[in-house]
Image (cartoon, rainbow, N blue to C red; front, side, top):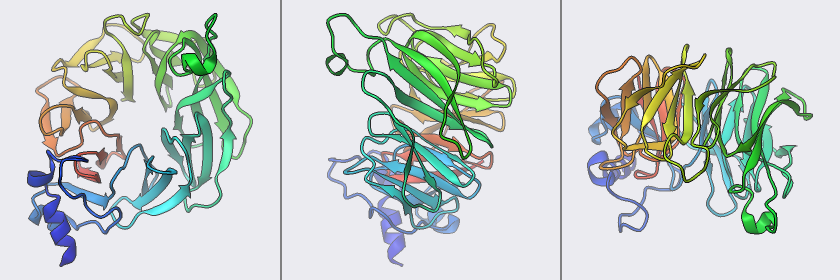
Length: 352
């Protein structure tokens, strides 16, 4: 079976250490995924298997039936693939400078074109601009969804005397972070809150509120109805100060868990604020993505085999559980963790 040849050549033992330019031929850009039995026979750890082969999967989002991922090579493409695996279908093409992505029922949303937010039906079709960026005025940094809304973490550059927006770089200048909400089917954003002097990074939403990370202001919380944001964890104040520099975050019932772009440790804090707990002090965690599922945190490792690490929320010994996910995006639906794997050129599904 030809598929098994490709699987064997991309198995954990021979592909973990490979990368673009290493001399190892990547799998076909789009191909069928193996069954659980085929994956096990090819050497993938128990419960782990690629659901699609792709040379450059990046950001991830989920709905009830599909995984959505971006490929920022060339003109940029948004793909979807069934959660159980299969061929990837293009949802949108010619999306320059692709960024973060989120899904909401029948729609998928993503950031492209220097910070504009786009939307399209999950089956594909002509994309529409939901929120246009404007040079010198603002751009989307991240986005999240619930059943009825899209929440956008928006950054507006604060002009620096003597520097143009283009020369200073809108993403590096001090900015005002704004939380915008767009209702399903709408295109007019509602401003829920803002924080000046910001270097905003990631956003997450659940029934208890809106949470985001900010390298200067810390871990922030805002009521779903809007109002004045609250800092749950103080930030570093400047981009060159020591930790904390909160980056990726994930929510559980009672706590906010966040990675750090400065010291690469994993921490958590109660949603009401209070003492910060260190869950993993190894300094080996990717700040790009993490999720919480079934009482554990899952995030990528940066060194060694660049695996997927499992860390108990209640404390305990971290465990490397899988294969080549380090540095990639991570998403979960509670039944499995999905990882874009730059070292194996796949989107992986790891059963929980």
